[in-house]
View 1 (cartoon, helix red, strand yellow):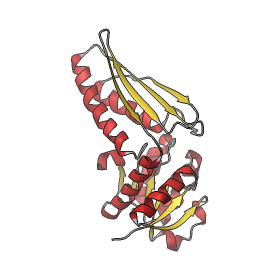
View 2: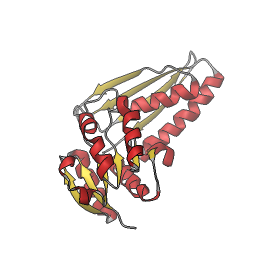
View 3: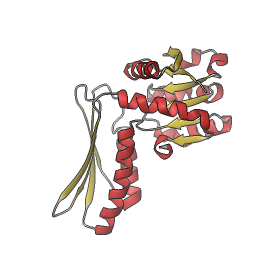
View 4: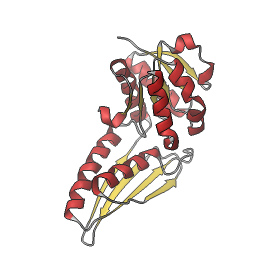
Length: 222
């Protein structure tokens, strides 16, 4: 079944999502900087893909849950109200998929990190650390991806993983997880070459919304 998409936030990521939609032949109904101005009758027919700012999610999540057919939330930096947002979407019966990072490669990194954390914890003698580097326009630090990665490693291996952040130039995103012992070091690194991987994953999530109910984290669906 064909879907229609509304993009919330028409910055760099919004434009990239628009390009991916065009490549896949998916209808873009509207791209808006003010999602609350969207006609509710249109919203009910559409999946909203949101790449805005944390403050926008805080201000707009009730409108999204109340009016859209389904939502894909790619914005990060709102983990402090995550339980509140999830509960409201569930109350409204609106499907929602969210992620700290919609890149397929990053989600593969999450799986590899979980596995390696379990093995290294059994072996013993390792300490963990995470370093993330992003462009200077990214407002939240550490990144949502780094926070998710740290939670995965800590839950799987019983670690307490420190995270360091840098904001440099136009770097799309680099995340490195390191396991260090007295004898050696193991590093898993994901480097994004552009924002297109994030947009592709978000569009795939929008397609998934046709066949799900409830609220899901993208990494659990792929």
